[in-house]
Image 1 (cartoon, helix red, strand yellow):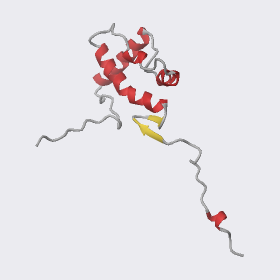
Image 2 (cartoon, rainbow, N blue to C red; image 1 turned 90 degrees about the horizontal axis):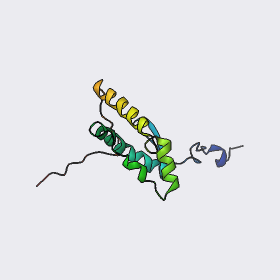
Image 3 (tube, one colour; image 1 turned 180 degrees about the vertical axis):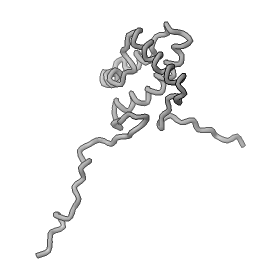
Image 4 (tube, rainbow, N blue to C red; image 1 turned 45 degrees about the vertical axis):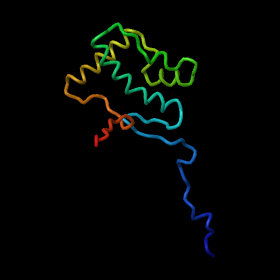
Length: 119
């Protein structure tokens, strides 16, 4: 007796999951506030560079999620907003120590510089 076509179908084990992207060591769910927070991670590392010049500068990302609780919570979970001054300075010191050790600056597949050739 031949098997039915239904028994030959593959089961998609990822059917119930949202699409994800692995970028810079982080697994990011696409299409929501977690993805937007991951885009802001690049700006956060630029801010850490700026903290070496002005240690009293306020975190501009603390105001990004105003009026959008899901985004604000995602940015806090990502560790880039809602930090105390001491936590910011600790993250700055860790980032600068990594750079001094010869490691590359933060980079992301989502933030690339594209040059348009001048004709």
